[in-house]
Image (cartoon, rainbow, N blue to C red; front, side, top):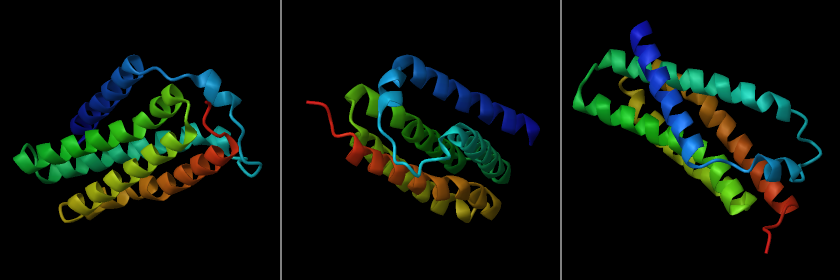
Length: 157
């Protein structure tokens, strides 16, 4: 199990690193955006995402252990990667377009893909499905925060 977990974690890191290199984000622009007054937990968000990614890596490991190296499992691993790409696309899409609403839409798409993945894996491993719940619970919160930020920060002309 530990070797599988490490391999999946390395692939997850490589995908994240590659996306960050290909599509760097404009963090200065993002940090200048107005935020809702009630957003008091912004400093915790990176730690929330770290926990979510650890749960996702563990979920994928359980799916792999349940059905190692089958065509279906490889397709599910590709689905995990697609969900990760959708999650990580949020910041570069929003900052490169300088459009917070585009970030909210990207977040909503990621949630939909995560929900589809969870439904697909549930019959293989309910534990793997439960491990995706933190993402399914957090994603709408993040998308809502971004949607509120979109109203506070209209697109630049």
